[in-house]
Image (cartoon, rainbow, N blue to C red; front, side, top):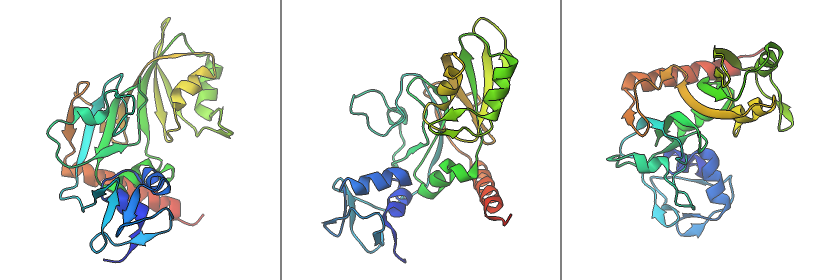
Length: 249
């Protein structure tokens, strides 16, 4: 097997997302044939080289897993938590292969979360270039004006650059109104920050759909394995969007 970049090997082996794998390398937590590697451009061969992360020898996953989880409120979307809070990994009973979250949901957010040990799948699904839409239902204190709703859809300044166009639909007008929000990007606490821009606080936030995949009847803390047809549909969706991105203007 030809050599590959180390962060890609770690990602494909189900250690972490490619971005997290780069962090592990920079922190000196990766060894190749006994030597610590801290250069992101370093290459290796998983079948030939001995690669360890935090002293644990890597192996190619025996089985690729794709899991849909209903993340409850007050659960951390990480593999480990230094504060010893409940993580999404604590909910995956009887899952023997090591998996990790695809993207994240905030501690006080709930809803649909994907987990996998397929690093390339995870990287493609979270890449901003693929623009996989995610749909949320959100409860806020109050209601936006029509002008604010349109500004929300058009994008607001956030972290030095404007947010991408978003979908916004009022589901129920009340003292604490409910909205459906559809994003093609996922910056840290983006929805909360966008509503705060208009002086509104998010009281509840649930992700109900990723691409075509709906949360459905999964209850908080429950999970299921994706069907092969669902995995194939995601892969086709990713390939189509990547092909459009590479198409000459």
